[in-house]
Amino acid sequence: MHGPRFGLSWGDGFHLARLALTPEAKLDGRRIEEFFSAHFFASEFWLCYSTIMGSLPQHSAMELRRYLNRTLHMFPYISDMANIWRTPLDQYDTFIEPLVAWLRGHGVNLMNGAFVLDIRFEPPHDRITVNRLDYERDGATTSVAVAPDDLVLLTFGSQAADMSVGSMTEAPRPQSAGRSWALWKRLAQGRPNFGNPDAFFGATHVPNSRWVTFTVTTTGKEFLDMMSALTRSETGSGGLVSLVDSGWLLSLSIFHQPEIIGQPPGTYVWWGYGLFPERNGDFVQKRMDACTGAEILEEVLRQLRFDEQLDAIMASSICIPCDMPYANNIWLKRTRTDRPPPVPEGSTNLGLIGQYVEVSQDVAFTIEYSARTAWEAIHVLLKRGPAPPPVYQAQYDPKALFAALKVFVCPKTARP
Image 1 (tube, rainbow, N blue to C red):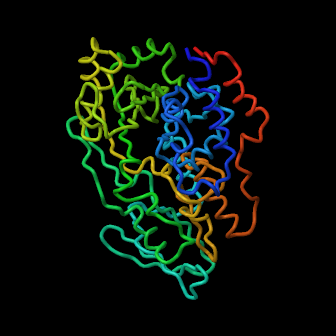
Image 2: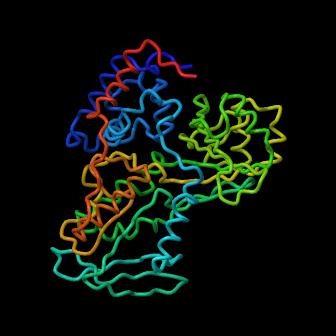
């Protein structure tokens, strides 16, 4: 059950509205904490919102403004995520596998394990026309000529950059390769229309962008049965379960089973992450990013007070931790020019796609964002076909405004 207005005061509501209505031109480089009091960051609303979206007080006020205007209609359901769409199976099986099969069926040649080293342009410098790209595969470097009427669509940077995976007995070993954004860095040198990769990547950003996630595979029913009894919801029917008193601020996602195509009968999968992996655990006195899978699973079970079944759950489970130093970097404070447009000014055959390309008004932590950048790049370069539909803006939707207003005018927003 939830208290009135998810713990928000009328003043908090005013500050939310003020930020949502502030033009982005006034938000370059500004942080969320500049707009709100300490009371707001202790509210149930902020705890729900930050554990779903990944926002922290030191993150971008510009990004939060976009989220507010994209999700206003969801305010009454912020605790159960009722209006967030999910795939019936994991996203790889749902999106990637069918897309790859469709592309191959249309004659697309997909090369795995190929790392693009460089993209070269033909003169003059006031135009951007790719004429060659160099890639490395199996230790050999290959240079490919690009004709003027060929299209090059490029993704640079990754929220999974420099990720490392541990095991039940080993913590993830931090990586610092930087290969994911190396090409972006080269392209941006002396070319301001390619944005600023330093706003998102680099060791100084890691404390504000790191997540530690973990995936648990279990052959026992004890954990899922106890979670179902605790939350009074069937497996896979609720949203995140966030343990807001945990030092790591743990959030758990208990999937509908099976989660993966080919998942064996009697095998179950669930997932979680820590929003504050740099802090010590309450039962395992270590930073989360220094813990083994067994230590993370023990911390979760003790937080839930599942002590009587702890040994049985530990014996039937495999917990794989994953250190992701840049998973949350799309939230880092930035300016409006730090991400390049899908088609940089002067480009004749190069399009940019992915989370580090600028789409006005939209939020980057979605599959829709990636699809929209590709659609925009193709539409501009080919000059045919429909343009992407406008980005939904809830602040102009009367139904969304009414839904958000109910949070503040109703004496209680209690939901079971």
